Amino acid sequence: MSKPRRESKPQKRATIVRRVAGLSPSLLGDIRSLIEATRGRVAQTVNSELVLLYWQIGTRIRQDILHEKRAEYGEQILHALSAKLVAEYGPGFSEKVLRHITHFAEVYPDERSVSALRRQLSWTHLREIIYLPDPLQRDFYAEMCRVERWSTRTLHAKIQGLLYERTAISRKPAQLARQELAALRDEDRMTPDLVFRDPYVLDFLGLADTYSEKDLEAGILRELERFLLELGAGFSFVARQKRIAVDGEDYYLDLLFYHRRLRRLVAIDLKLGRFQAADKGQMELYLRWLDEHDRQPGEEAPIGLILCTGKSAEHVKLLRLEQSHIRVAEYLTELPPREVLERKLIQAIQVTRQRLRGGND
Image 1: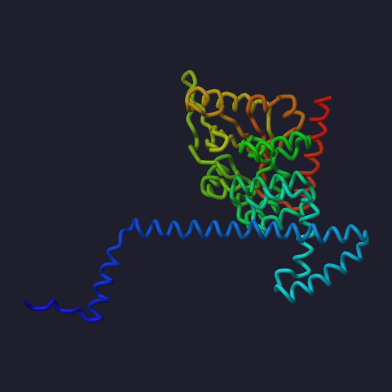
Image 2: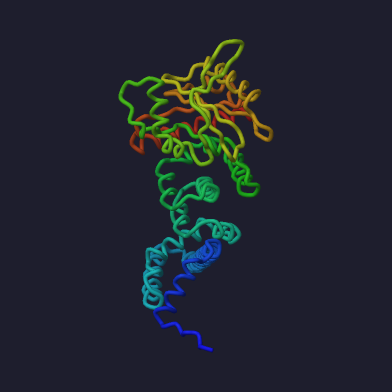
C-alpha cells in the first residue's frame, strides 16, 4: 500500500489560502464587530478617566490658588507646576492645558455634574463648552451634543452660529429653561423650544437680490441636505407642495417634514414678506387637515413653522400662536457679521423674557 504524498510547503500555503478565502462572511463580520465595539469601549473609558483626572487636578490647583487669594500666585503656580509635570509626564500637562482644566473645575465645581458629563462628552467637547459665559448655554450645548452626537467640529460650528441664542429656549425665564433641559437630560424628552430656531440662516441657497417663493422653495430642495442641517437633527423630508383638498378647493403646503424625536409632522410655509395675521389662519387650516388625514397613531399633533423675512413681536403675542402649535421665524438669505446677529439676538432674548415675566405677574 503506497503512502499518501506529502504536500510541499508551497502546496500547503496554497491550501491554507484556499481555505481562508472560503471563510464565512458572518464569522469575519462578527469578529470585526467585537473588535470595533471593544475599541469603542476602551476609548470611552480612557476619555472618561481623563476627564475625571483633569477635574481632580483642576480642583486641587484651585484649592491652592483660592487659599492664597492672589491672582499673581495663580500665574506663578501654573507656570512652576507645568514645568515639573511636563518634565515627568510629557506635553499633555503644559501650562495651557493646566489653565483649561483649572477653568473646568471652576465652572463645574460639583463632582456629580462631572460624573454625568464624562460619560457623555469627550475632553475636546468640554473644552469648547467651559468657556461659554452662561450656565444655561453650557447645559444646552452639553445636552444637544449628547442627543445629536455632535463631533467637536460640529459643536464649534453650532456655537459660532449662535444656535443657543437662536433657539426658543434661550428666550424663556431661566427657571423654565432649566426645567426643559432637565427633562431632556433625565427623561430624554425633547420639546419644540429645543428644536425650532429664529432666525434660520439660509445663506447657502445663493439667492439673488430679488427672488420669488418658488425660487426660495427650489433653492431649499436643491440644497436639501444643508437645509436639514440648519433645521437640526431629527428632521426627515416628506413632501413639497403637499396638496390639501377642502370642499373642492385645493391648497398647497410648501414643505412637509417629520421630526422623529417630537413624533410629529412639521408643516413649513414660506413667505417673501413680513408675517401677516392672515398667515396664521392659513397655517391652522393646513395643520387641522394634516391632523385629520395624515397623522398616524402614536404621533403628536402636527406643528407649523412660518418662515418669513420679518415679524412683529406684538402680532405674535396677540395671536397666541403657540396655542395653535404654530411657530414664526425669520430667515436670512445673507449671513450678517456675527457681532450684528449676536446683538440682535440678545435684544430679542431680553424683550421676550421681559414679556414672559410681565405675563406671569
